[in-house]
Image (cartoon, rainbow, N blue to C red; front, side, top):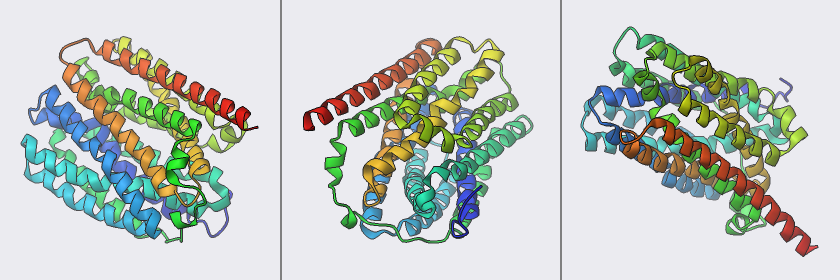
Length: 389
């Protein structure tokens, strides 16, 4: 990896590894853990929605603070510690409302971390921003390692061991944040343009709408994919391997994004991502009895997440600049949480009432609508530019 000696690639990569190791255990197995406790599909959907809904508030609150103080890394360390602290509550409660409160407190800080760490990473990379994906891929590796290892573990022991495994990863995440060097970042006082004026740009509005719809489409995957597979005869080991394969495809793509983005541009990459994501959900919905197609569909995670995310980070940096990076990243994170939270609630309500194939078809439709939004925003931007000329 080409980099200057001053760029702390190793500490940045280690933090991403352990932060996403937590998610690598949580996303595939939390629904199974809740079902093991006796919760219904509706309860699971609501708990996932509560957990993810904090992304609506937390990133914006922390982004506002970070953009005014510039103390992004201190906020990351503070959030990582409290994420670890509140996760302790999972060991002491098994009922709906106490568990909902614990998850709300835990996720308020867990969701505060990533947006600000992304801004710290971009600041450290400086003029080498195209190297972002090569640092971020280590988060994907952490997800793979945890997801695959726990899948094998839960074929031998009960999924009730999940909270302890995630606590170990959360502790490592906090400790690794202490090893990241601090760096001065600009605040909103240095920005020449108002944050809300940036939001009114047609391209920005279209991007945010497309991003929201894409995350809405991910809800059946994040909340019920493991349950869906288990109901159709897949073992925990195979389920973990399927999640790991998806993130392995993500890693491969991240290694190439520094070449693809300059060549194809952010909008083309995002548009292709949305169309391939629609294909992915459609295949999952109708092919659960066909393992070859299910395994193949997981490779499309490279498009439904990796390519879109890398292009989105570049788009946000270019549109919001240094002074509003915290709030720009926070808004991106908030819409992620809002989309998945609403989708998880709706999926939980309908999972027992209809064929899951229809739910995944609705997810595919969301991606197609997102592509339309992106194209409409681009056309509107060209119209505005022509008028200004």
